[in-house]
Amino acid sequence: MTSQMESYLRLFVEETTFYNRFVLATFLPAKLWEPLPHFFQTWLRNYIGGTLVYFISGLIWCFYIYYWKRNVFVPKDAIPSNKAMLLQIYVAMKAMPWYSALPTLSEYMVENGWTRCFSRISDVSFFSYLGYMITYLMIVEFGIYWMHRELHDIKPLYKYLHATHHIYNKQNTLSPFAGLAFHPLDGILQAVPHVVALFLVPTHFTTHIMLLFFEAIWTANIHDCIHAKIWPVMGAGYHTIHHTTYRHNYGHFTTWMDYMFGTLRDPMADEPEKVA
Image 1 (cartoon, helix red, strand yellow):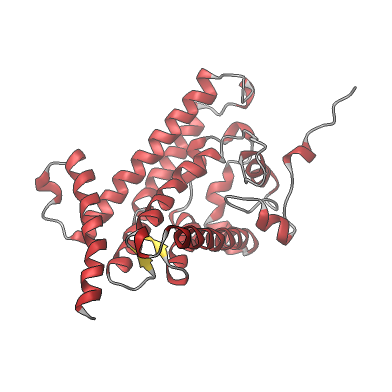
Image 2 (spheres, rainbow, N blue to C red):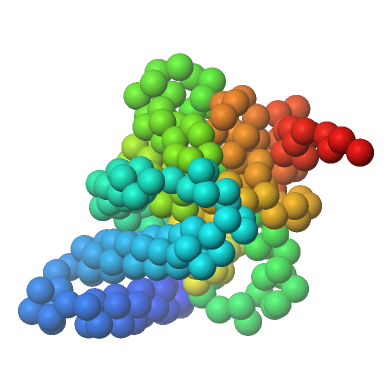
């Protein structure tokens, strides 16, 4: 490895070290985390960060739709019980240590120069950055669609992994906290396309990390059962149908993959026609 490459890779290590110190120093005494190797500091930072994003996004959104705007977005009889939400939190928190391993591993691969990541947008130009990010998101969308679909179509994968998430199959059992309530391996498999994309397209490192953590916010949103009616977004209206039919709307951010592969089902088509 050339000294120029080593110097460039050091930028990634400096960035992750900054994140580690900022998060860990905020929440833990130095004696608990400073002796840890860099890899385990990164895992601990991702665990704390993932847990915070999960609870903050879930609590704010539940408060807004179930209490502040009670009966506005969700009918009273469709609000999940506290017991159901606590069970979802329990499942998600059991999986969180394993979820945190994926971004930790992806950061390790970036720091060692195994991926096509770049550190600064100025290294490629802003327009190239936008093009790369769109390509990255297309790969992620395609990958998550097929990973999700195969978790249904391959029976052992459904039985032993994905069925854990599909016990929430009615509107009054779905909540923002169900967004990360998966078997750990299931959750990791559905996030793997984010890591695969790093080997296929030049990717801005910070954007990659932000998108991984954005997943916790996005999955909270698509499990709230509120149909936002924003084309072509794969919102909660579409995803609620997925939880009730099991055979439609496997997509993640958009409806395009389901449209292309014949699995799209529109929530508007399921609404009863209004009688004049």
